[in-house]
Length: 90
Image 1 (cartoon, rainbow, N blue to C red):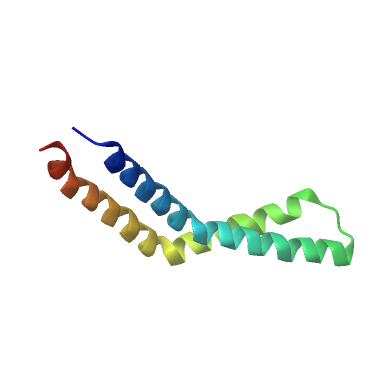
Image 2 (cartoon, rainbow, N blue to C red):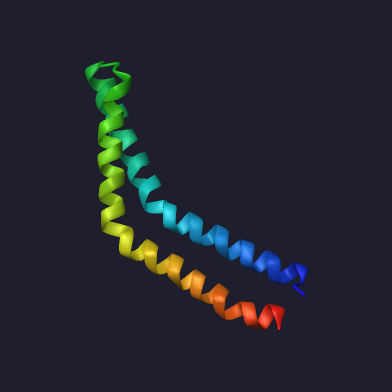
């Protein structure tokens, strides 16, 4: 039987993996958004779709650059879960 602390540990680790896995894309979108906003403020261009394409490109580039790191984190977490299932249920 699973105890409450084991369940909370698994949930905490899952949330950590999600945050670490999504951080590169979120950081890229944030950085590009700030740069585009500064550009729009200095040039007084108020086009809403101007930030969309650079953010998509930046997120895809961040995914390409950090994809191996993200996959490693997710597979390490999955392997840890599979290894701990026997100890939790047995």
